[in-house]
Image (cartoon, rainbow, N blue to C red; front, side, top):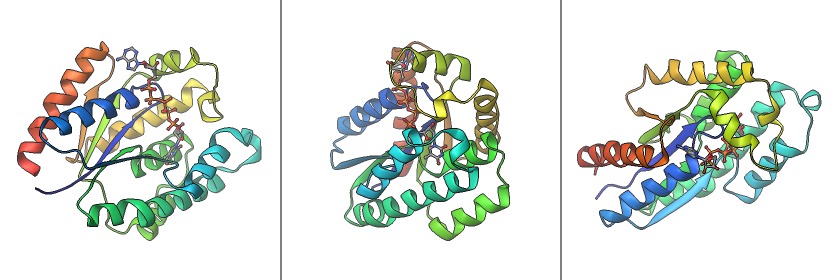
Length: 210
Ligand code: T5A
């Protein structure tokens, strides 16, 4: 049986945590239990420190968009080299909460950084390495943010205006329309329906890919 690297993507509040649990159950049901769960930014000691920096340690006027981009890729490099590639070599499955697609959507789409700059950095850090499958949970940003705002702790990026998330979502959708390894899930439905959709789509994909 072939092992894979699966990524879950989406705006804040799109339900990535719930989706990851559903993926885990679907894989467990067909006997796959050797799974590593990770997240970006994060997943290593360095990455988790960077996660805190990115989310809580700055105000928006204290970090440039380029600095944000560079530290995100530092965290990604550490995770890929120290965790993901070695685990894949050992036959383990990986499920990641966010990966490189987030940088395309948030840093190019949301922040407006130069596409060529981000793609160059991506190439330098990742080369041709990419996930086998990405599930993108699509949600109107105002609904995702509503879910998030009911929490106590709001991070620096969650404080961005709605227009930032609208641009980010548009960029996600633009990339997805051109990439057959990214599958869209409608996250604007009852949790049970989203779980059903993920289960169905994933099982269909697994038949062809393991
Ligand atoms: N970032 C990250 C970049 O800018 N560039 C990058 O390259 C990378 C890697 C990371 C931040 O960094 C940015 C993006 C992010 O802003 P994060 O915490 O990983 O931060 O990302 P968030 O999206 O903020 O994570 P959240 O935990 O906030 O969102 P989730 O995981 O999508 O949402 P979840 O599952 O916790 O659900 C939120 C709430 O909604 C409910 C859940 O019960 C929960 O209360 N919910 C639903 N309610 C109704 N109906 C449904 N269908 C529901 N599904 C979930």
